[in-house]
Every structure is written in C-alpha cells, then in structure tokens.
Length: 147
Length: 161
Image 1 (cartoon, chains in turn red, brown):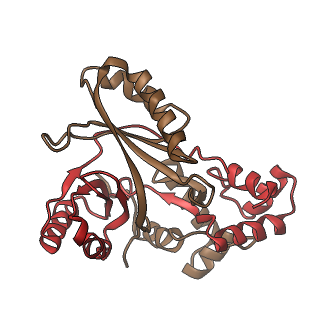
Image 2 (cartoon, rainbow over the protein chains, first blue to last red):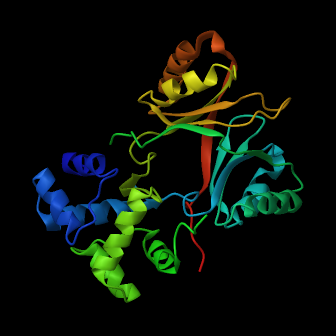
C-alpha cells in the first residue's frame, strides 16, 4: 500500500458518487486518472485490504433485524461449536474473545421474527445458552479508521 | 407501515450488496445485468441513500490489513440515569467506532454500554479505554475489555434469493 492507496482508502470510506462515471469524479477530486483509480481499487479489493467496495446496506432499514449474541463455550468444544454457529447463514460475524463469554456473534436477518427462531435453533444445535443483547440505543456509527 | 423497498429495489440490493464492479460506468453495468435503465438504478440507489437504507457507498477496509490488529470491546455498567448524557460523549470519541446501549443480563452480564475500540496493539487499546473511564468517572460502576482473539466469520448481511 503506497500513499496514493492510503489517500484513496481514506477518501472513499463514504460519499462515492452516484453518477454515470463515479470513478472519474473521484479521480478528479484526488488529481488522479480515472483508470488509475479503478485499477488501484480493484487491486486493493483483490488483495483483501478492502473487504468490500460499494453500498453498505442497513439491515434494519431494509426491514430486517440485527442483534449481538454471546455464548460461554467450553474450551474443548470451541472449534466444533464455532463450526456449528458459522454454519448458520444468519450469522454475519463471529469473534472469539478473551472472557468467560468467549464467542460473540452478530445475527442479521431479513425479518425481525427470525431472531428468536434462529437463537432457539442455535441453542438446540449447540446445547448452549445464547445471551441475546440487542441494541437499545446507538450513540454513533462511523468508520474512522485511517489507513 | 409501507415496505421499505419493493421488488425492483431488492433486485438492485442483491446485485450490489457484494460490491460495485470496477468499470468506468459501474451503475450502467449493474443496470445492464438486471435489464433496467441506468437512470432507474441510480435514482433508486439515491432514494435508498437518502432514506438511509444505504448507510454509505464506498470502501470497507479490512482493519486487520491496515494494521489495526487489536480490537477491544469495552463494556461498562453505567448508571441508567446518566447514560443518555454520557453515551453520546463516549460515542463521539475519535477512536470509538461503534457505541451502543444494550440490556444487562444479571448476574452473568452487568454491562449496559458497549464501546468498540481499535488500536495497533493491546497497549494502545488499554490507553484508549482509560480515556473512556476518565470520561465516565463515577457514573461507571464497573467495566471489562474483551479483546478479540480471532475472527471466526465475517460476511455481513446477505439477502437471499
């Protein structure tokens, strides 16, 4: 990643234009050529520096629902339980964390009533209790990571 | 309540949720694949952006690949009366990327405020958590920091067919 890549990533965490030639508009703003912007973004995506490039949809505003769940998984069963949990398409992210509650995952579903049903299925499949910690209020949400 | 999106929108969501193509006219390419007019695709994307169905359009960096390898979920047991005033202050700190109020689940889980802190190493996360502690003062009765040890899955929302 060079300085131009960093400028691109920092400039494009939002605000990509909806226009006939959006990469050309970005290129003009950064003093680059359209083809260079396209090539660099494609290379960053290919290399995995960008996990996605495009519209970020809000599951709740699409009519769906999202919640954060936690489980205390016995260490000797951790890998097997992770495989079961990850096998649910409703599980959008799953992180191992250093705590008695050592598995934290996000459920994202298309219809709100699927949250309770999915949690019940995960509890049956794993034999473990799932703590459901839905968002009650949001105090901020913005990507502020600099490259 | 009216449906937030119709079937045409859904087709556009499905065609773009994994990303935009890296071609000079990406919205035209999406429109062509769906058999829609480019103007229709752009108009509907703009409506979804205005309605905040689309949070933003742009790059989602993999923070591990940018060197932000330490991520700590700091969780706090904050006085319910004082949380509405303090929550936005914590969420407004430049290094807090996500900040939510969530339910306590006593006795296992006494925490009601979640603030995600990213850093280049565990010491940097610890220093930032110290800043949150200073901001909350005696409104916080306890806290913990759950460092991520491994990403087990990361795919994001996917609309089915």
